[in-house]
Length: 234
Image (cartoon, rainbow, N blue to C red; front, side, top):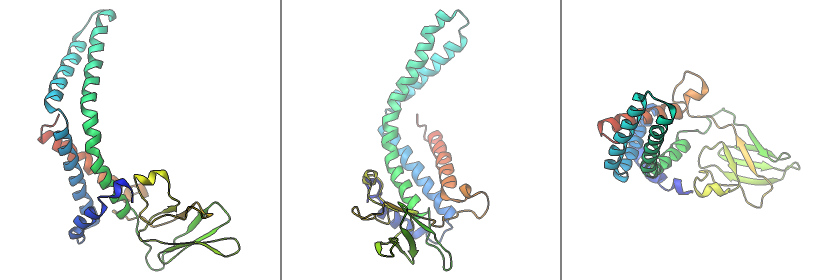
């Protein structure tokens, strides 16, 4: 389990009462949670009064530049002021924005694991390909079994969660873990790719549209803009 996976048990606990609802509705509700949480954290972590003053200063600088109708040499100080105020606002807003995004990133990691893929239905085949070549991989029930060219089993890993890739532990797994675990570090197989079926939120449209990503991030953006406007967040 990586750092961003630590809140996963809490998210799953909160998601249990939503189980009777359609997947699309659940994702919209989680998008609302993500938007509200990130905007609330940003508001309390950011210097709102300074941001409001900086925005007013930046607006005045842009208006002054737009109204200028002289030589370029005379516009240089105005252009410098525009960039200076923009940089000042970015400096004030960026650190709290990054801090506010961390809990939301943890939520996204959980959603990608629990709403991204599903175990195959009865009679639905899942292909498996081991790396490097020379090994034969297969998914048997909810296990990944890898055999050598001689037929000997070199890896037998249970799959507690439907994941498209099982591999050895990498450095980035300190941040984001693989919910299905890892292949042995001293084993000959580096990774196994599985054609795990994706969870389809919609039954229509291209494949990239049917997953959780489009619906979730569309509503995250929409809710964030609404909360920003209603909450008068700078």
